[in-house]
Length: 221
View (tube, rainbow, N blue to C red):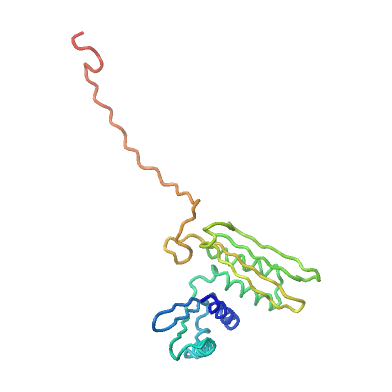
């Protein structure tokens, strides 16, 4: 249910923050519950000889009271980490914690996202940036939609908090994915206002009808 998913997501987000955690999917089958963790660095999630994932399985099993061997965790690698807002948000967070200048860190993330085939992106960062007064900065590039049905399919969004020395900064990353007919790197559904202009067909020259002598005149005149 929703509460289970929310708590599991929060727990994994905090535990696997450094390993590029990018979401979780819960599949319930009659025999067992499968939890699929999406991350950019799956090797770190698994740990050496699968030790870490077994630890996580034990924690989840004990916390939610699952019977023995009825819950299983899997790690799935994210194909394109540039189009995953969660992974980019975490990367920006670690850049800021490492003491990188705000503008430089944000422009770096925006450029990385755009170079890897996104349609558009926006990074908003707010809080005490350098001075005592809090303010917000927006970094935008490309084309970004913000309403309607396509937003559900095309926009990947994530919010993180960075605990800096002088206070908390808020980071919001929005990525507009590009249309992919195969549905691997982006949504299959085309944009409703996308107009496809087809190439004109080859025109076949129309043959002139043969001119008859009596054509159009009166016979015998």
